[in-house]
Length: 87
Image 1 (cartoon, rainbow, N blue to C red):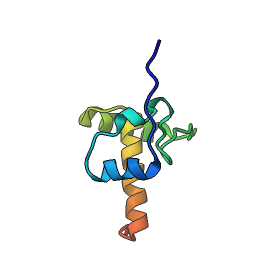
Image 2: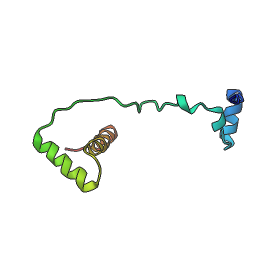
Image 3: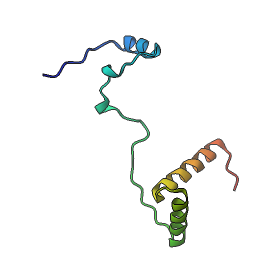
């Protein structure tokens, strides 16, 4: 028979967390989510020369094509949001 987890109030949970205590026993990690980081599939048609260039750069860096695309897109988005992009 599995032991039932103890429950505490949200106020007590906040207090323990703020005090640096381990609160993991009060959390159900099977239902944990990272808002805004859910994966969604996107299809993009690219010319062959671009795919070849991506593959070369990914190989040079030691990552997959998908990883290099994600990193470059994230960098560009951050630059755009900061107003730092100057073509």
